[in-house]
Image 1 (cartoon, rainbow over the protein chains, first blue to last red):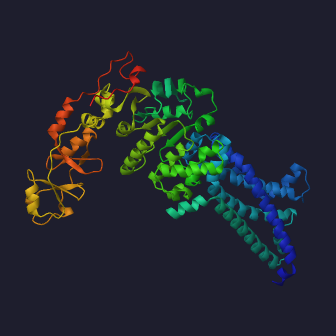
Image 2: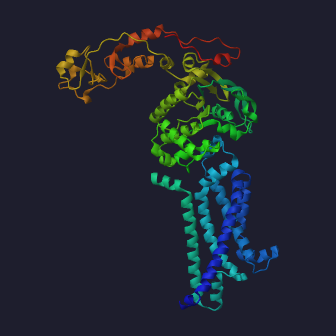
Length: 215
Length: 388
């Protein structure tokens, strides 16, 4: 493992790049999935279209998307924007259903009483429904985070550097060390994302722990 | 005052939930809408705060038709309590109660102070302020629900089966405390229930609805028990109507028989000397009745577990129903009457109570209106209590 010692700066910079390419789309994807999920839960006619439609996006092979996007958008193949957009699409694909189901999980009598208290629609959404949907949305976000960390590595095949580059490097030189380091770094990154999401969720849902403690 | 003027609701699927409903809920009184499921009572309630839009007729609140008003604005001025309370699980008890004050722009400190005041008013400890709803029992949640509805002191309250989901003992407590609160607050309340007992206990007036959202009868509880307008109402009001109607008649001052009593620990001989017709009443040092005992059956000094506990006790001047029940339930056939502190005054026998009941006038039958008894504005007026 002298390899890691010699290449520590490179590995760290690749990890940073990987975190950027997987993390930013997570936030963007959530922001896009929120209104789409709300539409799906609010208008039941739209639900199947939005859920199946966005779900199908996830079945597009990532390599195909990485190659197609530069052609569609007119960007250079090496432009990391393509990867950010592709990963955002995957995040949206995973999160629309999560957001819709999260909002759908809010008990009906809670919604009814919010309306009867005089909440207008937007304020009810932001101060009653979304806070109550946090546990469900957070569960979906954790899956999306792991999935993003894993899929991003494929972008090494089109030359966008991140931890995946260690795999192609190791493969081309038939050299195991960078591959092992890459896997460990990916897993650590996924764990880190998970811890951050869990921590944020706990901060936002003190009421959940109160409920658990009392049952 | 809330006035329904030929209000109808037909849902998009064609179901007629409410059919030309006309009645008035007077200011400061509790009007109960009661009926079997499918009678449109909840729909009617929700049309008042526009959670459901009527398809015909008008609903007036204090001579204003809120049809054009901003709905959220309207609802903030109307208290609302539902079954299971519908509390916000992610907010503390204090924050739940402060909901409407915060919505109408009170500052945080004032809303919080009001919440604490209400927590106390509904009989919860102040330490509950920081708890979350999941940490409360069903009955406690329901109290918070009532507090939340009262927070901004709305003149009108809508209550949809608020006490139905709790066990019978808690329900009775909640009902009693609700009546006590209402005595102080004097809100205009429309209360929905499927439980006729609850309707009769809580209502200043009761509107019985039949399936399809039609008003069958509107009257005060005593009148409803005395004069059900048809078979449907009679069936719905149920059995024991004559007996239940006695709940609304105060007892006169009966000339009570003096009752010789003994204390716990009395010997069989002492008890036998005090007994009348084989039974003697045992009391504590303050003359609070504890139970009856048959001296002939005991060989030792009187212990609490030897007492007959079947007899009920009635307060002097309380409802005739309680007085009669005290006489009927007493193993000695002598009904125990107590003063407001619970100390024994004397006993009364069932024939004396019955004689009094027979002398009483029943609520006078009101003249039928063209649309049928008890359905028009004139017959909405509370029926005068029969003179005592």
